[in-house]
Length: 300
Image (cartoon, rainbow, N blue to C red):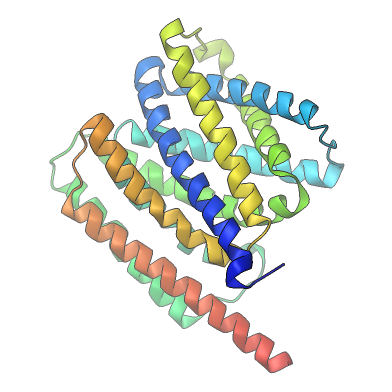
């Protein structure tokens, strides 16, 4: 893998595009969820994305993955289905920028998941960065506790934090998946497995959407599929530690789209908390790079 600035430039740019498309998709799903309900928005988006993926899989003659890769697809698909349900439930009750800001705690959670699942060490600097992130979350939640919002908004904030735990697990899976499968394959199987998960509740909640909702469903599916493929392509070509900071650009997109489309103001606690969480994540990333460099120097 080319670690030079030139070698990272293309994955970095594609990752930026993927994050921007995801942000637009979040707003599309919020509008769709308000129109046809969260479950139906998730189900019909997954169905449309699966159909799109199948067409591309057949059209580009993608190779069917082996059992080991299928297990990774299955695991990530189930994790993302639960993550998406929690996150989109939350953004129906929270401003987009606030939900995105809270979700930024995920890379810090990933440090401890990696320590638990991959037996990686967590240094003092990373622990300090985590505390900074926790303070950022507390600052954002302080706005909720002042009683200026709807009663279930605090529950929505907690749902985002639950989603962030799953997103942290997803980050660990994503890097390996991107190295083993093509971007089209990654996006197709994620939609397919999510569709399978959401189908379990179809007898109870599924309804046929109106024709007015179809363009939003197609748009959400197209944005989700394209952004997934873009991120898979980027993460297969550059180290995760170089690309994860790009995720924070989603806050800018969410603030702009939330204000333009839903009339959501950007509050001072949300902005301050987001900056604290981002600072914590960047400190943690730098400490991890320093630790890796120290190990490499010691083995040279």
